Image (cartoon, rainbow, N blue to C red; front, side):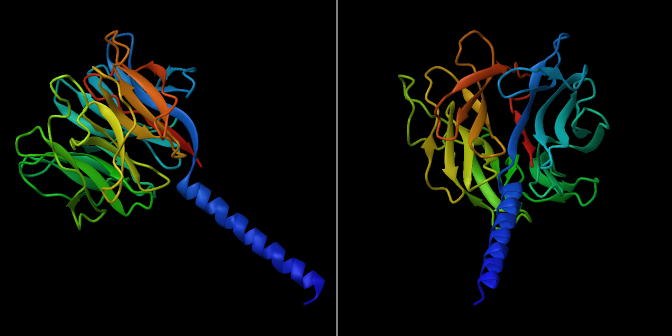
Length: 315
């Protein structure tokens, strides 16, 4: 082979590898931007605020004064945000969307716990079905093709989260007693529903110590880069593999509740809420994916909605 031909082939291979790495990085591991979270405004209402990951630059982005706004989720482009908008006077709860800068607020659908699909085409959420039981639905971003994925009357389903390839969904399901809650997985069409964890309400013994075998689980969030799912169980944050194996505890704080875990876009950090400071405040903290370097970012004072936050992806 001529030496120039050889080097040209090497150059083409290198360009191909670089292109593959660039595409893979854009799909499976965005950079970490600002954080959207539930804040308490000066009038006492819960709204959406943005903050930098170092706790600086706090700014209010929604101005609901009829109930509250919370449970944010970013579009995979990082250019739009969805959140839950509650009107306590009418009892209506909408999933709203807005541009990154807070403009163009739109009602998408009535429901709670929205989650944008990684491919950007769908919103998953929980809403009452015709039977009155909260089920998991998906809808396109233009408001069309509303599809009910689960159908088990009497069993509350909530908090869907998507796999990185948008082909599967994990959600939390309450047992018929309304307390015991477990994680379930299905395809994005609602097929092959199966249980990942078992529901056991009690997670601590009489002395307040964690029972390591307890399997109660809620508030799942799927890592955008792999098959790890982070979730709440017994007041602590855990991870589990998407096949139900590898259950690992990340926090261990006595007499406190650590909840509402959310992955960073690069899959290396986890946001969560906690009342561990013991001052009556619900705070937003961050830690590494293995549970190390836990530190406070800001008070999030989440109420009446949970303290879920969302980290903006920067492709």
